[in-house]
Length: 115
Image (cartoon, rainbow, N blue to C red):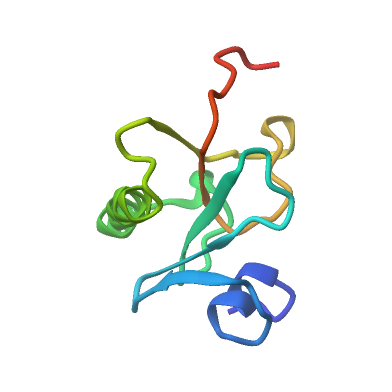
Protein backbone atom coordinates (compact mmCIF):
# COMPACT_ATOMS: atom_id res chain seq x y z
CA UNK A 1 0.00 0.00 0.00
CA UNK A 2 1.48 3.34 -1.01
CA UNK A 3 1.40 5.60 2.05
CA UNK A 4 0.32 8.58 -0.06
CA UNK A 5 -2.72 6.85 -1.62
CA UNK A 6 -5.85 8.24 0.03
CA UNK A 7 -7.98 5.28 -1.13
CA UNK A 8 -5.53 2.75 0.31
CA UNK A 9 -5.64 4.68 3.58
CA UNK A 10 -9.47 4.64 3.61
CA UNK A 11 -9.52 0.88 2.95
CA UNK A 12 -6.99 0.36 5.77
CA UNK A 13 -9.13 2.39 8.20
CA UNK A 14 -6.50 5.13 8.59
CA UNK A 15 -8.88 7.78 7.19
CA UNK A 16 -12.64 7.99 7.74
CA UNK A 17 -14.27 7.23 4.42
CA UNK A 18 -17.92 6.64 5.33
CA UNK A 19 -17.52 3.00 4.35
CA UNK A 20 -20.68 1.19 3.17
CA UNK A 21 -19.11 -2.16 2.36
CA UNK A 22 -15.82 -3.91 2.92
CA UNK A 23 -14.51 -7.42 2.47
CA UNK A 24 -11.08 -8.90 1.86
CA UNK A 25 -11.10 -7.76 -1.80
CA UNK A 26 -13.00 -4.48 -2.01
CA UNK A 27 -14.13 -1.39 -0.14
CA UNK A 28 -17.05 0.92 -1.01
CA UNK A 29 -17.54 4.40 0.41
CA UNK A 30 -19.39 7.65 -0.30
CA UNK A 31 -17.74 10.08 -2.72
CA UNK A 32 -16.80 13.36 -0.98
CA UNK A 33 -17.67 15.35 -4.14
CA UNK A 34 -20.89 13.70 -5.32
CA UNK A 35 -22.37 14.44 -8.73
CA UNK A 36 -25.61 12.56 -7.96
CA UNK A 37 -27.70 12.00 -4.82
CA UNK A 38 -26.08 8.56 -4.56
CA UNK A 39 -22.40 8.59 -5.51
CA UNK A 40 -20.37 5.72 -4.13
CA UNK A 41 -16.81 4.68 -4.97
CA UNK A 42 -15.92 0.99 -5.10
CA UNK A 43 -12.22 0.17 -4.98
CA UNK A 44 -10.10 -2.95 -4.90
CA UNK A 45 -8.19 -3.19 -1.63
CA UNK A 46 -5.16 -4.04 -3.75
CA UNK A 47 -3.50 -0.87 -5.05
CA UNK A 48 -3.82 -0.70 -8.83
CA UNK A 49 -3.18 2.77 -10.31
CA UNK A 50 -5.53 2.53 -13.31
CA UNK A 51 -7.10 0.25 -15.90
CA UNK A 52 -3.80 0.52 -17.78
CA UNK A 53 -2.09 -1.51 -15.04
CA UNK A 54 -4.59 -4.37 -14.94
CA UNK A 55 -3.28 -7.85 -15.62
CA UNK A 56 -4.95 -11.20 -16.24
CA UNK A 57 -4.55 -11.99 -12.54
CA UNK A 58 -6.84 -9.03 -11.72
CA UNK A 59 -9.84 -10.23 -13.76
CA UNK A 60 -11.68 -11.86 -10.85
CA UNK A 61 -10.98 -8.87 -8.62
CA UNK A 62 -12.41 -6.40 -11.13
CA UNK A 63 -15.42 -8.67 -11.65
CA UNK A 64 -15.92 -8.61 -7.88
CA UNK A 65 -16.14 -4.79 -7.96
CA UNK A 66 -19.11 -5.07 -10.32
CA UNK A 67 -20.78 -7.69 -8.10
CA UNK A 68 -20.35 -5.34 -5.14
CA UNK A 69 -21.84 -2.50 -7.22
CA UNK A 70 -24.98 -4.54 -7.93
CA UNK A 71 -25.34 -5.42 -4.26
CA UNK A 72 -24.98 -1.78 -3.20
CA UNK A 73 -27.45 -0.63 -5.87
CA UNK A 74 -30.02 -3.06 -4.50
CA UNK A 75 -29.31 -2.00 -0.89
CA UNK A 76 -29.66 1.69 -1.84
CA UNK A 77 -32.95 0.98 -3.62
CA UNK A 78 -31.78 2.16 -7.06
CA UNK A 79 -31.30 -1.12 -8.90
CA UNK A 80 -34.67 -1.01 -10.66
CA UNK A 81 -34.68 2.73 -11.48
CA UNK A 82 -31.15 2.54 -12.80
CA UNK A 83 -27.63 3.62 -12.01
CA UNK A 84 -24.40 4.41 -13.80
CA UNK A 85 -21.05 2.70 -13.32
CA UNK A 86 -17.96 4.56 -14.53
CA UNK A 87 -14.20 4.07 -14.38
CA UNK A 88 -12.12 7.10 -15.37
CA UNK A 89 -8.65 6.30 -16.69
CA UNK A 90 -6.03 9.03 -16.96
CA UNK A 91 -6.15 12.82 -16.72
CA UNK A 92 -8.19 13.45 -19.89
CA UNK A 93 -10.93 11.17 -18.53
CA UNK A 94 -10.98 12.95 -15.18
CA UNK A 95 -9.08 10.44 -13.04
CA UNK A 96 -7.82 12.43 -10.06
CA UNK A 97 -6.94 9.63 -7.63
CA UNK A 98 -4.59 7.05 -9.08
CA UNK A 99 -6.14 3.99 -7.45
CA UNK A 100 -8.61 2.33 -9.81
CA UNK A 101 -12.18 2.97 -8.66
CA UNK A 102 -15.66 2.35 -9.91
CA UNK A 103 -18.17 5.20 -9.53
CA UNK A 104 -21.76 4.16 -8.78
CA UNK A 105 -24.04 7.13 -9.43
CA UNK A 106 -27.82 7.15 -9.04
CA UNK A 107 -30.80 8.81 -7.46
CA UNK A 108 -31.78 11.06 -10.36
CA UNK A 109 -31.95 10.95 -14.16
CA UNK A 110 -28.35 11.25 -15.32
CA UNK A 111 -27.44 13.01 -18.57
CA UNK A 112 -26.66 10.74 -21.48
CA UNK A 113 -24.11 12.98 -23.20
CA UNK A 114 -20.42 13.23 -22.27
CA UNK A 115 -20.45 16.90 -21.50
